[in-house]
Image (cartoon, rainbow, N blue to C red; front, side, top):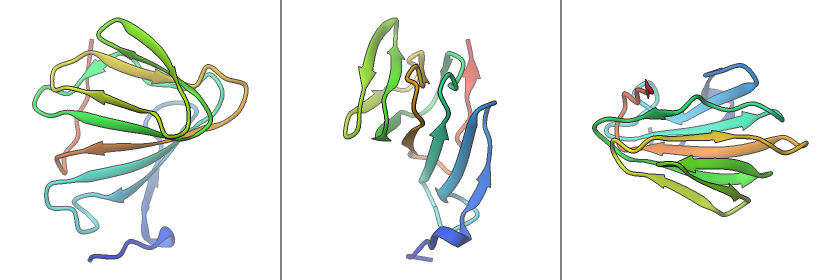
Length: 116
């Protein structure tokens, strides 16, 4: 399945205040890749976590997020990217007053978070 149409994606929510769409994953053609589009309402985010065996790239598409990587905090806007190495503690939160959207990219079809 080399084309993924918007109406064919798997939707869900990973935490309160987030809406996720799995654009690429094990259920729609991904063999070693997961790409998730996530909308975050103001105040929404993820708890501090790691991915033990793989890295994660989070690209900000819309709005601004606060990103924390190994204790360093930065505000990221559209086009900015957080690259969390395998095993690195990280999180994102929408600290703005407007909605934000990110693309999370994982080199696996089974992304798992270990909360710390």
